[in-house]
Length: 208
Ligand SMILES: N[C@@H](CCC(=O)N[C@@H](CS)C(=O)NCC(=O)O)C(=O)O
Image 1 (cartoon, rainbow, N blue to C red):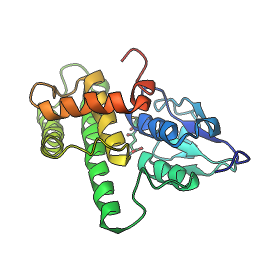
Image 2: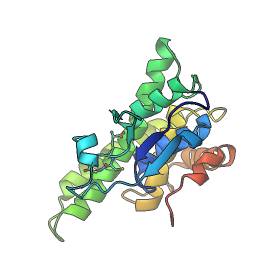
Image 3: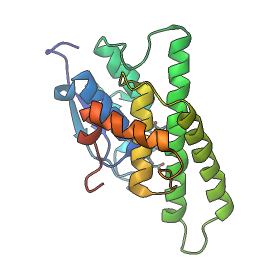
Image 4: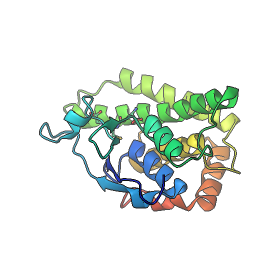
């Protein structure tokens, strides 16, 4: 992307963990000047988000001609390709698919955590399903165990470390699952990652 390139609109709140992935990628790619953040309200039927992404989910990137690109992983690949960078996602070969798979595993932690938060937010008090919450908690715990056994490479910021740091940041913020006591390697990994990568602190949810 050259300085003459058009600018993009990112529909996302500053608190969305999936939006945070994209905001981190934008910082790491150094293309913040090309992207304007426009908050979205996923609960508002009149918000244009539902026309831009029929799923009504954020983040959603709008190109200058109105074309919408989602979800977070697709947006990151789109922006990285435009910036001519293969630092975030390997361009080809098994490394590419291993990275994408691990990134999806990290996203799965966020997804399951989000569903647990929504279970409490959307259901009337006392009607939450413990069985459903346990089902989601199992996903989070198994994925955390996999990363505890094999944390991402601290030498680089890529789609895996971005996804995992946002997932752990979300667990710390909304606390659907307690993870710090029983994942010492991940605790150390997140602290080191946060030290190495300033975009992590800069994209934290306000008041997190
Ligand atoms: N797979 C999607 C997930 C996006 C997602 O679930 N976003 C949440 C906010 S963090 C959302 O829009 N939730 C509203 C809804 O599900 O209606 C991605 O990676 O972008």
